[in-house]
Amino acid sequence: MNVTVRLAQQPEADELLGRSALAALVGMLLDQQVPMEWAFSGPLTIAQRLGRDDLDAHEIAVYNPEEFVALLSEKPAVHRYPAAMAKRVQQLCQFLVAQYDGDAAALWRGVATGKELLSRLNALPGFGKQKSQIFLALLGKQYGVQPEGWREAAGAYGEEGAYRSVADITGPESLEKVRAHKQEVKRAAKEAKAKV
Image 1 (tube, rainbow, N blue to C red):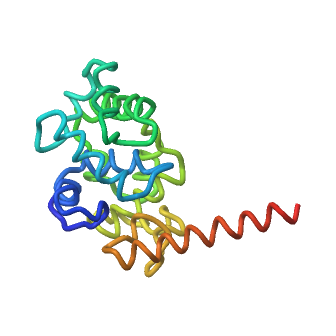
Image 2: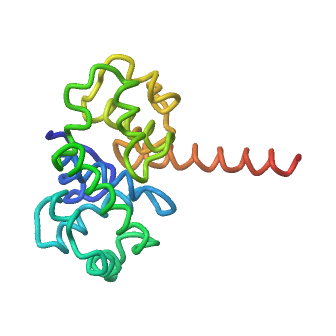
């Protein structure tokens, strides 16, 4: 895996995301209740605090949980909720070790269909349907992971030319378009709720 992405909008963090399947997966896991760039720069911060140039699922899976919380809580914190996210990152790594020998890319390597890949992503701790579809779209649009029917399995996030999610971010301009779309969705939901 070696692609150019601009998800974190920070060269060093994006370089790691472009070469590390686990970093991309952890970034996606962290992508909730914080700005996307903050979430996707998290894997680099974790790797640096571990004294590594990449994340290792085996190492994280067995890391002392309290020490791992402290690692993610150091200022600046990796996430708005560092303790909860430390637990989720460890659960994700433990799952990857148990099911894929710690190899995050094994999730999609050799998968025949988008539906099968979506099913594998849905099985991950911390990944619901929406997060799984967004990550599937990200894999297809930016990482070249395109099993048959991947766009359909990713739902609206797989649409070409859409600006719905992190899957569509290729630089500052597209980041602004995605933000604008998310704000519009929130505004429409608020209006719909007010009518009830």
